[in-house]
Length: 243
Length: 179
Image 1 (tube, rainbow over the protein chains, first blue to last red):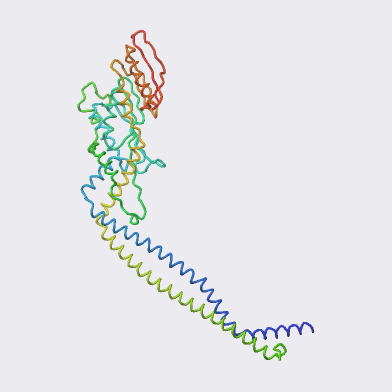
Image 2 (image 1 turned 30 degrees about the horizontal axis):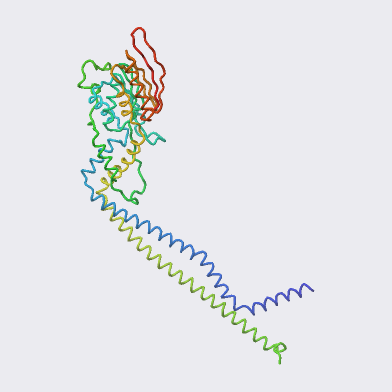
């Protein structure tokens, strides 16, 4: 009996509350819907819009760079650029260029008048750069006819020849010497999205380096034969025991 | 007559209060609805404008890329030249000028000294020399000591041995240098 009375009271109370506040329900629902719309649609739309503006800024920058690059590249003198390109890729080849290395050795031998008794060439994988090495090299071990002075002469000639090299070891006896040389090379890694970056002209330092390197000799690429490694000016006293 | 005992008046007052609350509530709801509508419209218009200008930029980019096509070779060359300059500079800064080192040391050797062996590896040079007289050996050794003092190429110098070879009447010395 008590329960029934309470239920009646509750229903009545609810009815009363509904009748009293029914005017609030519609605006309340509108506000709830507005809040949901704001949170679920408006805020993400604003974020997308801001992201769009950022992307547009990048696109404008890229376009400006592209225009700048186009004007710059148009203004470049092709023949001078080609000669710079040839010089620099001879100095530091973009591949394991063992032809150039052999020519450099042959040229140095001819210029210094020091005969080469033999050589060992460590080429390795022609298609791969040495992993983890910032300065990859081609290693050549030469046997020279002559002592320390011959090594000095030969190295003297080699330092003025491209590609760039470094002597890592020499061992001279009275009449024979062994010289280990590292010839540098460096692959060009393809870069992503190049258009977004401005192309810089060759710096003043770069130009002076180009001038410095243009004084070096670049032996013509030719078929190196075993006899080329014996200096032409040498007499029988420098006769190569290998050939 | 007191309002407290007049229930009709009190009820009217409460009703007015309720109505004014409802009015404010309705105004807030309409205001919020209008605000969100305006915001949505603005975002839509801004998006339209943004996509139009993005399309223009893309069109411009395409046309510049088409114009750039014949110059791609030149572009690649200048990029490689700059790349080589950077790498060559690094190599030149890193590599040891062995020719200068050997040439300087050999240049200090006076006449009358014969180089038996000369070894260079890493940062070490070792050499064996012979001479029939101690004078040129002394001159050479003093020069090397001076160089070591000035830290010019030679950082430290060790005289490993000095032998007098009785049969040939010559002197043989063995030197180690750290460079």
